[in-house]
Length: 114
Image 1: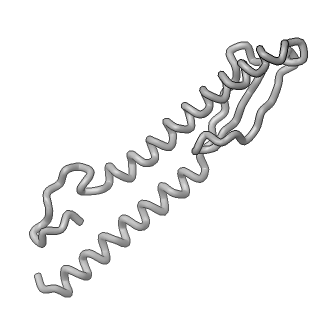
Image 2: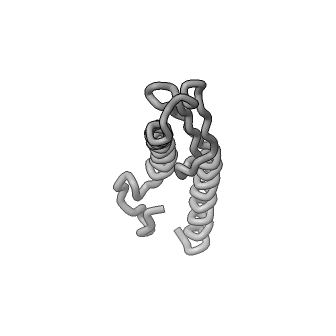
């Protein structure tokens, strides 16, 4: 293998990895999660980073003291954040599973792991 062949192969591998990164990036951007409090008083939606996107209250929310309502919102938010984190982790795992170095593959004959 001459130097140009190695460079061409390396560029090809970089393009493949770049496409995989783009795919996972799009997937991460679309991740959302929603969870409700156990009593159904509050429902919270978050994005992939766990950022709050929406909060909705059930009819029973009007009758709750604010401290209980706050607890319901936080509990729902924590569950939604955990769901989003699991989805994001799964997306990132798919990216690293595709990487030769993530699987512990030894370098190829050129000494490159890619």
